[in-house]
Length: 195
Image (cartoon, rainbow, N blue to C red; front, side, top):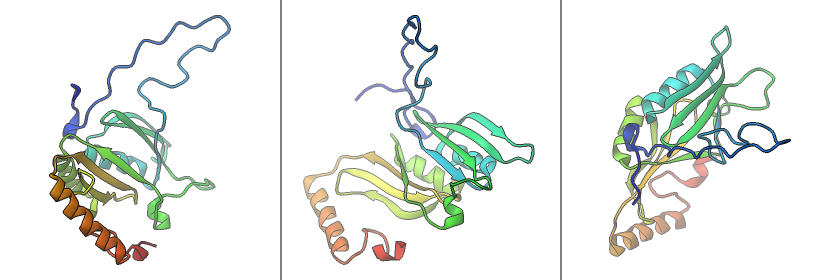
C-alpha cells in the first residue's frame, strides 16, 4: 500500500502535481488541465448552492476551493475538494437545460467515494443529514459498501476494501443473487419501485 496524506474522514489527499513543462514558442501558456483536476470532474446541479456547499463540507469533509454567488445569494459556481477529487456545483438558473435531482425527483448518477475509514465517513454523512438507501455492509465483491442520498437529491456510494474469507464472499454472493432472482436489489425494495 502506498503512503498517502489523509484528509478529513480518512480520505486520501491528492499528491502534489509535477512542475509544468516549459512552453515552446507558439504554444499556449498554462496547463491544458488545471492543477489538481483529474480527467473527469462531476458538476452537480442543486437548489440552494451555498447550503449544499456547507452540507458537503460537514458530510464528507470537503474543503472549499471556490465560491461565486450572485448578489441575491445564488451559487454561480462552487468548487470543493473531497479527498483527492474535485466536485463542482451550482444552483440551477431559470432557462438552464439542467435540473436538480431534488426538483425532478430522480437522478441517473451515483458519486462513488472510496475512504480509508468508511465507517467514520458514513457516520459523518448520516449525522450531517444524508439518508440511507442501502445499509453499509460487507459485500460479496470484497468491499464494505453502502448508499446514501443527500438533501439535494444526489446519490452517493461509500466504500472501502475489506478482507473477507472465500466462504463469507460466497455466502454474500448467494444472498445477492437470490434477491436479484426475485427482482429485488440486495438490501433494498424491489427494483421496479425505484422507477
